Image 1 (cartoon, one colour):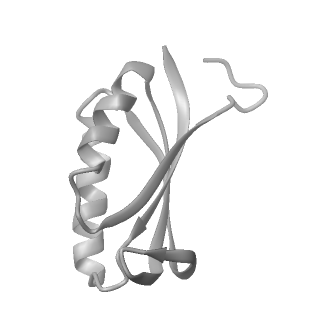
Image 2 (cartoon, rainbow, N blue to C red):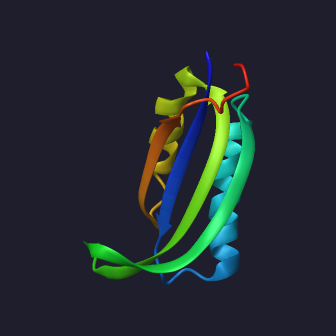
Length: 102
C-alpha cells in the first residue's frame, strides 16, 4: 500500500553544505530506488537541539515528504542508521490530504 510519509533529519552541525546535500541525496535516492516518490524537500537550517546528541548542541534540520510502499520503510530506516553524520531522524505517516485519493 502506498502511503504518505514525512521524515525529519538532523545532521551534525560540523558538516559543510555540500556534504549535507550529498547525504541528503543519498537519503532521497534510497526512497526513489525503492519505487518511492519525493513530494517535497525543505532545508530548515541550523537549530539548537533540546539536549546534546553525541556532544552536539546544534544540528542542521531537513524535512522530506514522500510517497512510498509501506514495506520499504524498515529497509530505509536501516540504511539511514548507517550514516554517521545523521544525528537523528524520525519517519511519520501523514494522512492523505482531503480531496485526494490514494
